[in-house]
Length: 307
Image (cartoon, rainbow, N blue to C red):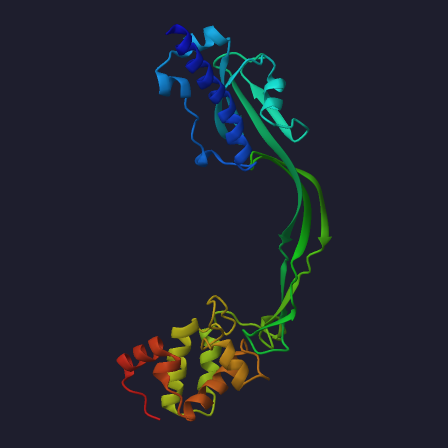
């Protein structure tokens, strides 16, 4: 009876020794951890034999070999790690790294065979260009014109990437050169044809002067009344008023419209503003549209403006 049991045990152990090698032979060379299932201890499953008893009788070690992230349990008499790997058909070369918890094979050992790959990649990185804005009187006020289109530069890097079992573990920049310089963009911005610096004389806040100009002009009493009131309301009688980000001058004209209607006149010239404003009114300008707040205050004080 004891001899019969030993024969059965021997056959089972042989099958256990061959099965991992067969499994490795039929499996693809590269596998991933999520595909793996550990090989069970066949003698224990079939005959409920104690592993220690098997090890004692046959002097075998039960070890775990992990190849490309896939674990397999192996019964072996080998004590040298590399001998065991050769038995399993693993070619150990520069592309493999062996990690073991012990120098010799023994029960409970875990041996990892890590496939190491090195790849050198070329990476192109954009270099932003700078934008320069140039004021010009050659285009309408506020308009923009791209006179030189910007071009991105390119910085080329040679990067060495190291993979273990298909996973990136490190990368090192080997070299970096500028393969194309960035070219700046130039944008022209339309500005006023004339500025404060072009005036022969400035007056600042001077209601006495500008009311004298209005009152001595060839205007009706109603026109003079409106011009004096709105002039003070809009700019405080300052022909060089430039504090508002949009509107300028004695009657706070929008430079865009001023340049369209009166391109030859300086918007900061109080004489030109008085003359052109009254011309605009006589041509039927909608006062509530051009000077909404100040005209409303004028109407509240003097009544509707009669043309």
